[in-house]
Image (cartoon, rainbow, N blue to C red; front, side, top):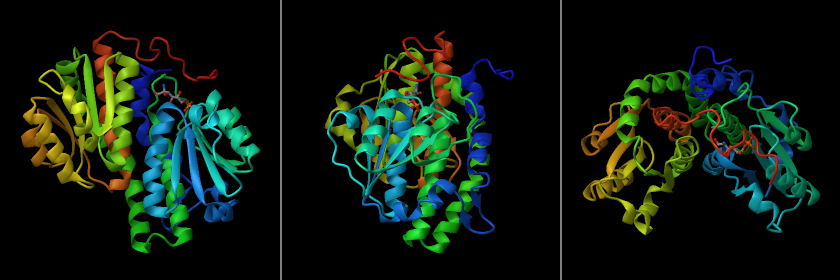
Length: 366
Ligand code: M6R
């Protein structure tokens, strides 16, 4: 049940420190400096010899795939493409035995993702699944895989599934980077250490809940909202916008911050809240200049910043802090305030948070 929370979504947001810990338990063995994932270990040659990795998924799981694109390429130097399963399956894609397909799905039942897997298998590709639901169709249809171990996710809006998918994908990228020699030993150890600290940092990020609620109250009547992020946090911007759309029915768009000047900047006026992910590591100065551009057009700025930040605080209308971590792990923290913001707005608007209109928890038809 809801364990005292008003909604499953809120419960699941708060479960993330534990869910992430459950995801890396038994896999991240820091004392021995190893990452143990049998699905990867048993097929390590395939992974190391692969020409490229193609990730297929839908919705929030597709956003986790986009985060993985950054981390796989950055750490393991493996070329990655991320595709909507629905587009991939109907595109007559070029794929063969030298490719690896990674399918990401919380439910393991998404029809388009399942069809993409069958297509890739028919072309001889090795297919790896990342699912939450044990024994689900996708878990059974793939050659190998890794479960997220997030526990049941009941709220239609995906929260802990997202952060645990990113956790699994990070472990995989680190394991492969180590095997390929594309990461230094000190960088590898640093990642293991920082990853172990993430659950506590998520707890810290959750402590800003009341502050986020007051921000939600100010912007709940907005009709549009823009989310911006760069690099690792670009997919988080997309995810933040999706969360707001699906439960509060406020139109929202996520964009890479630098793309703003190629179109969306025309939308900015004093009625447009812009949520900007502006954490210290990774393109910080560039994001700050994006913020200046929004400010000069009177847009309302909500900055997601690293604890202790001063520069963005001066420019923004509001800031929400998250603890400092490695840039590659920052999506696990920056996504937390965005989940809470959309949750509170939806509750204040009286929407059915756990079961938004027109949506199903798993989309088993195309
Ligand atoms: O079960 P799956 O991860 O395959 O589901 C994919 C999407 O349908 C899902 O992430 C959807 O976008 C969520 N409602 C987002 O919160």
